Image 1 (spheres, chains in turn orange, green):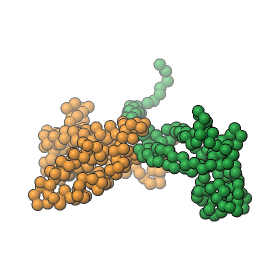
Image 2 (cartoon, each protein chain N blue to C red):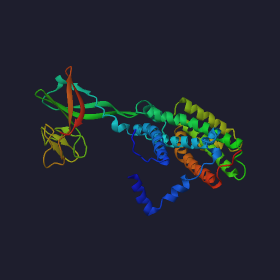
Image 3 (cartoon, one colour):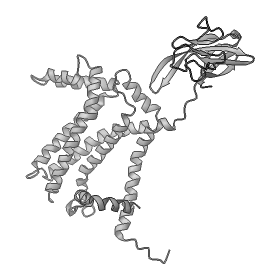
Image 4 (cartoon, one colour):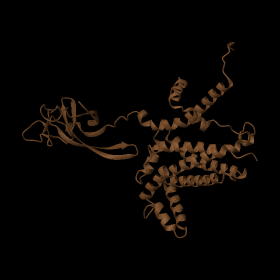
Length: 223
Length: 165
């Protein structure tokens, strides 16, 4: 049945080359854990991506209940955590996933560093990877404020005070992120917008660049 | 063991097992999220609480006006709702009618116009209802006033949701 639907579409639109381009390529022996178990270190990039997908999905579902408003933010989080079936699990996925992404990304960075995979011709991909790292940290920072509890509030106050110490542009930077005179309603709205629209948008663009470059240049050779 | 040759190639076997395991993992990931999203559908419609309205002894044949105040739960948001109710006794039965006009939602009042005694009168478009809430032909409302389900506990009248008659 599925095969026939696929054939029907393929006959009209020739979609086979599209996914072949993406999916059909050889995994070199030195990165295949089936050949050398130590090659599992090459999995961390893919695992980072896998957890990122979980983050995007669970985040999408969380916004069904979350409200970025100082009156209702905490209440809506409390409601989805305690009243909604599986709400606690989905929020836990997003909560723990946020940390797991950083860990996986760090391990991936270590692997790239110690296998020397950042060297010519892959310098640009290293640069894009570092940008992804910054975007992820930004996602962590902005997401931390959203539950609008004491921990979230004071963590953000501290982060903004650190930003303020940047020479020359420090104060403007703080105002830009804070959105107002105090850490309050405007800050929460801003952090929410940055967390669910701006940074994920930037992240998807950077990930695309990261993956296209891997396909163009291939995985770096064995040590 | 079957003697027949099932002709499952190595490639096919791998496809099946990988699809199966992958599907299982994807389902484990998606199930909590989807279950959370559809929670409002599966959450059985909460039986409306019964709220105290009036003492049974206070009721007579004449409809009296009462404000019903109750806390409405809307997810994480609670608000105070006020509904206007006309309530009277009909034998052993209690009739509690919503004062919301079924035309455009104004508040009707019992004998609100001197021209129409013994009737509910809506000042907005001159809608009229009989004592039992039946709308009068030829006036704007198209259905009777909604009626509250009620129960009597310890000599007091408690009302639930209003329903079309």
